[in-house]
Image 1 (tube, one colour):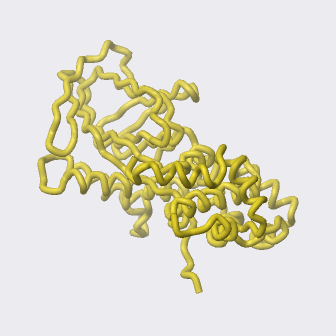
Image 2 (cartoon, rainbow, N blue to C red):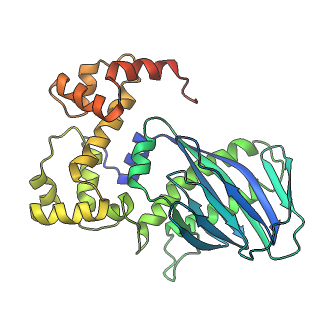
Image 3 (cartoon, rainbow, N blue to C red):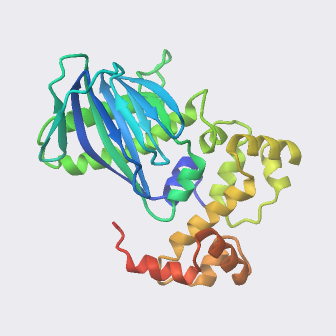
Length: 320
């Protein structure tokens, strides 16, 4: 019997995400940093250790103030700008390469900022799943335990941030590997904290945070090969078929079968990388009894046949 597993753990089994901390910024106002759109399969992130910053996202035409303890992820890889909010001409920054990461500093005499910046890397083709189901900008806040002392995801984030701050402060043995491992953990904790928030953004996080809809998400992730029907998924959520469809699509922005297909095809893409697994076995694992039906759906979803994807994946190193 399979061991029960939560939705986020299951998702992170399907989608391989690694992290890399790249630079620690120490600025005095006025300062400003502009970031171009990220490369495919990359998610930039920023961790404000101390001070404050203003985040502008031109694609969303949004502006948000960040304070110490705030963590921002940009799952769509959007171009964005961070600045001190004064509007003054920024003081030029200089960079120096440390043993484990880069340091960017300026001579500004105003309010101080201490910030960590890095990227998450998503193994292909799962960037589609992340970008389709996570918001363009995700901001979570690290905080101490609540009044009841219960260790929330925000409290764990606070401890993780402190460890990243310490590891990035010196030339410690194994520091580069440690910072990258902590960076990868940051993604899981940030998503967990966002899903626990009372104001979870739209998409997968809003769906997971809905107590009545979450069982359908867990069921599809836990047993994607099962021939799920809308009445079955609705029953898991104690809803009628029409009520389930309305609430599910309202939260996610897509239908339950859209999500199920994305999960199945993501699993199939992973399995096709294994040279010992036949295409027929992959089709069955993804919930298709007909090989032709599987090939048709996969080709439409991926833009290439299962055989083409298998050959392409075999030609690309795992860490590429």
